[in-house]
Structure formats: C-alpha cells, structure tokens
Image (cartoon, rainbow, N blue to C red; front, side, top):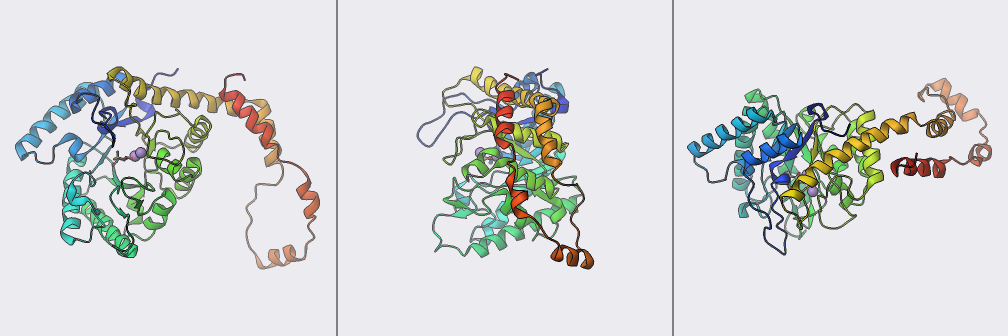
Length: 383
Ligand code: GLT
Ligand code: MN
Ligand code: MN
C-alpha cells in the first residue's frame, strides 16, 4: 500500500539524493554520486522522475563533446530505468559572478550571462522532455539596502523572466516557468521572499499564463508562514506548477528535512489539500539526508519522504471516511447555505435594511478543539 508508483509523480533532484552533506562549518561526508548512479538509485526506490540544475549534470566548463557524452550516458540511464525528467532548473547562485545577483545584478553583462546560462539549461531540459523550468533566485537579494534600489532589482528580474518566456515561445518549447520563493539564505533578504510575493510579481509579467510558482515547505516555514495556506493560494490562482516537499523546524537556516520529519499535522493538511484539489503535477522532494548519514541513510531519507506521503494520503481517506469528523464538518457547513454572495442594488438595499442578531449568531462555539483532537488521534493511529 505504501510502495511508490509512477502515477504518484514523486521526483527528486540530483542535488538532493546526491547531496554530500557539506554545510558552512564542515566539508563533504559522503562520496560523489554520479548522475547515472543517482538515476539508478531513484529507479530502484520507485521514484517517477529526476530533476537537476544544469551544472548538477554538466560541469560548467564542459566542452561541447563532453556535454554530448554526458547527455548520452544520462539518457541511456533514463531509458534503462524508466525514470523521467519532468523539471529542470539552472544554477544562478554558485559562481562568484553571481555574488550580487544574476537577474538582479547591477551589471547588465552579468544579467545577460545569467540569461545565456538559463537558455542553455532550457535547451537541455527541452531535449529531455522537461515541461517545468524552476527559477530559484537564491542570490537575488541584499544585505545592504544602500547598495540597490529594490525597485531596480524587481525591474531587472521582470525583464529577465519576460525574456525567458519569449525564448520558450520562440523555440516552441512545451515548458512553463515556476518561481520558487525563499525569505533569506544565502542572501540576508531575498527579493520576492514568499509564494504570495511571487504571485503578485507574476501578475506584472508579459506572459503571466506561462509562469507559476514552486512553493517549498521549508522556505515558507522559515518565514513563519502556514505552508498549506500558501499552497492553497497558489492553487486558487491556478499557479501551482510544481511543489518542493520537505520539512523544517521553524524559522532558522534552511534544513530541507525528510518530508514529515517535523510538522506532521501540517504535512497531513498539505497532502489533504493536494489530493482534495486533484493536483496532477510533480511531488518533488527537495529533502536531503542529514550530515550524519551514509548511503543507507540517503535511501532512508528518500524512501521515507515517499512512504510518509503515501501514509498521509491513506490518512486523508480515513479523515474523509471518519463519521465523527464528518459529522462535525457537516455541522459547520449547515451554518449557512452554499449560495455565493452576489451584489445587486436591490439585494444591497434589502441587506442594509435587514436586522441581524449578532449576539445570537456569536453564541455557539465552532467545535474546533474536538475536531483537532480527532485529527490528532487519527494521525497518531488510535482511530
Ligand atoms: C537549492 C535550493 C532549493 C531549490 C533548488 C532549485 S537549488 O538547493 O535550496 O530550494 O529548489 O534551484
Ligand atoms: Mn527547493
Ligand atoms: Mn530548501
């Protein structure tokens, strides 16, 4: 029951299962996992797909013939394992040239180079069938507000995203862009720090229909936000193009923990939201094994992400089938009819003249304590 199927659309990044455990205070603890071995691993674990940054697969200084050889080997591994490439992204954060931003750099030459690098990554993605291109602007931001008018940053950001949409259209790529927000790290303050901010920005673009969001659990938790609500807003706007699932212990450095490792109730309501909404996109786990782990721990992390998702999906079914929970919910929905509130002049006049007993309506409690306890008991396995 908890064995991943292709139809579950579980994906990982080369940078997640291939994460070597480096942190700002210590070097790598795990050996290199080649892209080909990584694909084999994901195939064995039952993942649907693999995602990567351009330089996770092709080193930045690779010659054209080296690139061709890497792509041949990688494609052969994909063929052998049946693993797909649903999403590709670009690394616009590691190179020193991007130290003050890529799309938001003061330097027009740097912005142009960022576009060049992104177009090349899009070409690779299109060749491998990727339909989503993620943009995570980790270096787009500031520590010092004297250095840049943030409005300039946003204007340059917009120019670049518009440019990339034009490129995708020109090339007839079946590719949509997904913007990933993060409040901070590596920058002191990253521009467009939350999914809600991204949604506002998307509305200002030239081709808003081509651009959506890739919310990450840990990133919204770093900002102290309710991830499920952020994702709900993205779904409501038809902008949930992709999702990064992991976990995080509150506002601190980005932990990218195994999905469900910390906030099990939020993870449950997130799975419920995705399943109830009929979300058909990829469920990407942007999680990596703890630095304490070896190759066995890497498997435990990736396998655990998928298994927890599937367990929670069963719990969602149990929630919908639980008579006591459903009785409380129907009691809530019985408090008013489902007709939308629509303005008419006559209706507004009637409403203005009608009497409303605000005390009577405010008397009854909502029953949320009981509902939450029942949810907890269901999650804890005693229901
Ligand atoms: C980086 C970041 C992730 C993003 C990746 C995509 S890169 O690992 O921390 O959240 O999803 O660029
Ligand atoms: Mn992410
Ligand atoms: Mn993260």
